[in-house]
Image (cartoon, rainbow, N blue to C red; front, side, top):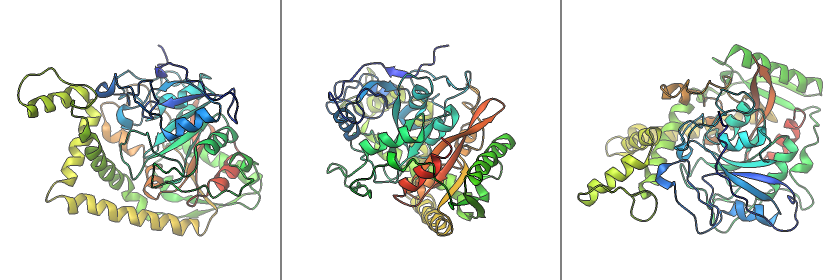
Amino acid sequence: MSANIFITEERIEGADDGPLSGTTVAVKDNISTEGVRTTCGSKMLAEYVPPYDATVVERLKAAGATIVGKANMDEFGMGTTTETSHFGSTDNPAAPGHVPGGSSGGSAAAVAAGEADLALGSDTGGSVRCPAAFCGVVGIKPTYGLVSRYGLVAYANSLEQIGPFGETVEDAAQLLDVIAGEDDRDATTRETPLADDASYADAATGSVNDLQIGVPTELLEGADEGVVETFWDAIGELEDRGAEYHEVSLPSVEHAVEAYYVIAMSEASSNLARFDGVRYGHSSDAEGNWNETFAQTRKEGFGDEVKRRILLGTYALSAGYHDKYYKKAQDARAWVKQDFDEALSEADVLASPTMPVPPFELGESLDDPLQMYLADANTVPINLADLPAISVPAGETDGLPVGLQLVGPAFGEERLIRAASALA
């Protein structure tokens, strides 16, 4: 079968020179590109052409990069396998017949297949790190606020960040250097904490001497045996280079998946209310009053997973249930943040398998949404805590890629990049 990596293959040339001159980049199809359609993997936006560039795209072009296409993705970022796309599934170049992870599966697959040197994805609950792990490449989820979200089609505003993919940590860090930093059009952004003459790419020295690694025991429980063995082999490699590890506890992560999905689905139900078939996007030909046309438009335009999340999110925010679900989820989020702060006071970085399982076979998880949600157990807590994380290849189990996830303190990307570059 075709890998189906791109939804739209169209070259967008950057400036004549710059730090990314001669470099090709794939861009996830929920990031706006002026004059080039941006579908979010949905029938709802199948023909939508943005009139403006996202800030990260402006910065790519200014840096001399050549964008080679808009990468396939789970519809509106809702999925862990890139199988909910209206445009079909993407095959995993590193493990044919298996999913590439999601929701940024096309971006990771583009790098793994050599279709692009670098790629941009977005990470709401692991959507950069999961496909990086499944495709055997590097993916960085920056601290919330380090990279502008202007021009990113919103799914869950309080959780998502745009992040880079590369074959190596240094490659991904070089892309982070280009896209990071304050943006007047996104009030949540801030300046990078780097010294004037420093860069994230410069941090990729591979030096881990005396690095203190905390291993949260909860993020190993229930993981696939082969994944755990591969994880410990990678930790052993870091030890051989001078790092030390000790176990830490994150008791709150037991409730992180539930809290994440309540918050994410609630925000999604609000954000996706704008797709009504009136201003842009798919519009139904159904006859009837406005309510009937609106309902039919959304029925036709959204896939099953998006409808599921809108319904659940609307329910969680409805009168009588807001305090029971949404407020309780926000309380759990505060608990998760507190746990991470405590664990990181005892360690320089935290380490876990990126995904508790190897890549699913194509079609395996589509009939069991709960299995897909639970696969995010190691990644969603980091988004709840607004922290940076990186996934690097750790090895294989039964011929399938396994990723190692490192988590750092807020705006501690330099530390993460230095540690991760010892492995990739």
